[in-house]
Length: 574
Image 1: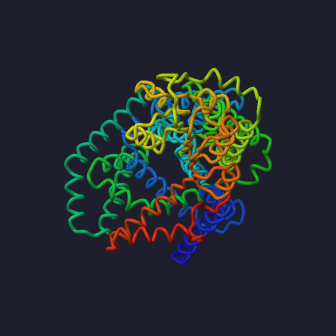
Image 2: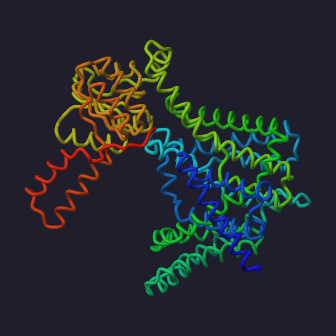
Image 3: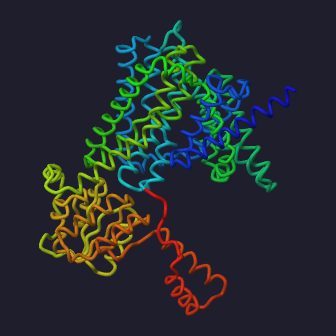
């Protein structure tokens, strides 16, 4: 009967995760929100469908370990070099400032003990990588300026989690000398890191090579799983967190030639247990607590969102980015992240958090996650509405942000490139090879600095702003190439550019049918869908690979391009 109950409870957890994830996906929300909400529904404080809490705790622990293992496999030092100054120093400043505000809230407003307030500061300093990435991908803004900034800060936050997980258990050691306890923990961590490095250099390559030589995916996956869980147990024996060991072994595995394969094999298993982890977190939330303390929960959520929104926006703005970019980054990072749940769980297990404080943090985290898509959408909407209006004060504000064009100001630039990401850079290289003059409008100050150092004519500003377009001499240009992944920015840029120069020829990047129709109504004929163009290139190379001659391929493509049923743009609504 016990075995039957175990299977039933485990099945209920999986079905709940599936239902919650599917509902969230259908509503175009991050699936993690679906896991959390369905966990609330099936948990002991609601329907009580799962009664084996030990099973739930075990699945959650395994999910956390696998989550940290894959984080170690994914993160590298080179990623930190790629994020730029705003990702590294801006991310550090964001964590420190948000932590300080959290500490102030805990001690002054809530009147909590110092250890509890410190843990609150650490928790609210983190944002959700899963939620942010899902929202950015759904909105097609992963490669936008604010999207790159958000991802950069999130990477630094994820790395900082490892240090936080080591520090948090010390907060419960009230009877010990804190510097001595911290030194002891650091010493243990350095010892384990040393062992891990030695193991990674001489032991792991030999073991993984032996397993890989067998050519069995099952044995390879089992080996990675055993290494991750074994490292987690080893660090727990040394008095450190289990997730620290899992992260460390992932970091070591990444440096071997088996790192990419290990990540590919462990990710599906990680996703399953991570889903169970978030369902289990939802089960811990007591809806009755929210009802009874709705005022406290609402004020806490409002404080956290205002602090994080203002902190991120000010930091991003201080690094020279436009006001709209700073606001979008702030709106996207105002939630509490998934790793904060891990810190909160350590806090309740170690007696740092009281049950009420734990319930407050869990409730606030889930609510801020739910609000994030709404906040980002509202900022994006009002930004586009502001850009479409004429004679607004924003024009005067943007004037002080425009960097004069580098190079010969009298030379007519036949092409203006709006957006200098990967697509814009490739276009610029092609124009240089063709001997055509061009200028660039870009929002990323680091890219502008590189362009100016290279002697390229460029304007720092928002291309959807009429004044910036005028300063870029759009009235004298022949062609405007709009490469932004953000559909709202593309539409507003085209509208305002045509208002300045009605004869301008425009080549625009577009993803969805709705934006394509809007641009056609404005008179834009050259619309580029990256997905459509990529599918044609895939088809061209496939036909060549099966032996078709070039003439036959060209004839087939003529027929394909006339096919009205071919999908050129996504039909999904914004």
